[in-house]
Amino acid sequence: MDQFAKCLVTTQKRPVDRLLTMPAIGPESNAWSKGADLSNCLKPADYGEVRLRFRTVLLRGAVFKTLYAREFAERDLATTITAAAPPMPLPDWFADLANAQGIEPAATQNYVALRALGACVVQAKPEPVHRLLRAEAGSDQENAAIVDVTPAISGCLPNGETLRFSKQVLIGVIAETAYRMAQMRTP
Image (tube, rainbow, N blue to C red; front, side, top):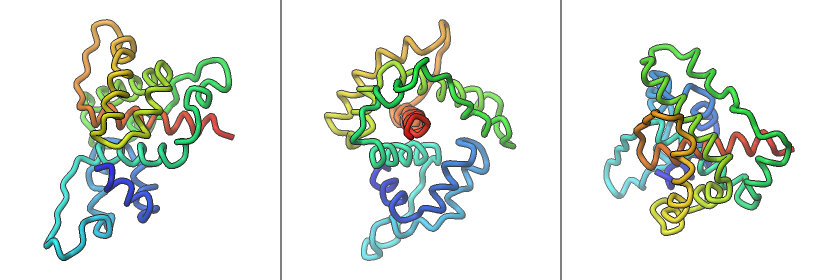
């Protein structure tokens, strides 16, 4: 997914911009790929017909990870997000979900909780998050960064709260949060 996201970011600016400004979950997000020409980011025709099925939320996370690595790889995330005191408040990135149509309330609640978790983890562990977002998927560096980020997860969940998510979803919400925070703090 990361390689596909890198290709999209490089070659498909309009569809990527649209992906990043629409609600992260729901019918509009799910229909996004039907309106985008993704063919130039798939294998060449000599491999035969190639079909790609994915959850848009996973692609969205991979795109944010790609954008973060491209734009902020050489910066220190800890310095970037703590450059202006006091600590960064939780941004209103959830408004896109509040106005979205056709989303189950439980899905909205879960995704908002995941975004809040991502924001907390980025603020609690900016250096391992920076390493995580610069690492290749599945690499030893990625695995080491996940290990270093993991302790912040329990500290970022409210008492008694339980969230279910995959490693890819966690990386995606962390990538979105880190990217948006770094953008907000970069002149």
